[in-house]
Structures are given as C-alpha cells and as structure tokens.
Length: 218
Image (cartoon, rainbow, N blue to C red; front, side):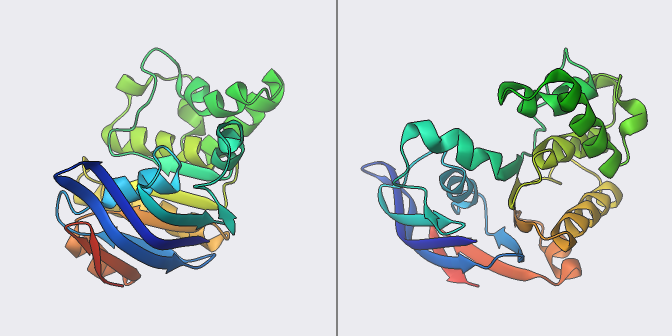
C-alpha cells in the first residue's frame, strides 16, 4: 500500500527532516510509526498525503508514484486516503453532520447523498445521535471520533493518523484505537504516528521507528 524508496526531505541547508527512508506497508496492515518529537513522523505522513513533496526519492501509494502525479490529480489521490489529526481540525461554526459532509460536498456530491454518507459515517463511530451538535459542545474524545468519521466518509483504502490520541485521556485513547482496529478489519490499511509507547505495546502491531529522520527499526 505504501512503498518509500530512499526518501529525503530537507527544509533548509541545516535541517534534514528525513534521510534515506525506505519502507513498505502492505495492503491491509496496521502499523505504528513512532519515534521522539522531531523524528520525522509528521513529515513522512505529509509526504504520503502529498501535502509536501520529498527532496529526493519516490513514494508509491497503492502502486501509484504520488511524487510524479500532476497537481490536478492530487484530489483524486486524497479521495482514497483519510487523515486524522491530533487537533481534530473541525469547523467550529458547522454542525457535526456538516463537518463530516464537508468532504463529499467539495467533491460535488449531491446534497442528499452528502447527508446520507455523513450520517452513516457518524453512525459507524457512534455519534449519529449528536449530528446537530457543534464541535465545542462535544468532549475531546467525541471530537476525535467526528474527525475519524470525516476521514472515513469516502471509505479510503488508506487511513493516516497523526498523534490521534495525544490530547485524550487513556480510556478514550483506547476507544479511538478500537475504532481504528474496526476500520482495519474492514480492509483499510492504517498507519498511526505516535510516541505513546504504552499504547503501542498494548496493541501488539507492527512498529516502524524513526530517529532523527532515519528508520531505525521496523
């Protein structure tokens, strides 16, 4: 699902965020990407999502070289990749349903279908009964579940999560991981960036460790 070949990312002459990254995440895998702050976890996810381009090397997602696709084809790539962030990135002045429906709306899906998909996605994370609430009326854990519903609305082949439990208490963090396991069981490849070693040990999944921009294990 993800193949990286000798990937480098340099922001300036003195800052090498990633150095000679070569790794493979198979279709249907559930993997953790770990390492200390500044190790390059977020940078790597941004490259996979094509938010940024590598300075050198190639990245394939689903067999497609995303470093070579034209700008106009990036939206098509992103329809097949869901992304969950630590800080939720919800639109505070829109309801939960509107937040989740935002993705199909910008893709030109008819309004009725937008709502149908958004409701189904909210139901999958157990929040359909709060579809008319606003983000600030929800707990942190509920907001993260909304963010997951938004990421899953297009039934992506790949789910990327960047420190998704960083702002949550341990009990809610376990609930979020349970949701990711359910998503993975339905066939979606899951890659979670985190520095939470306790959670990684509890999950017992494959771990790819980064340190100073290099793969040190995994």
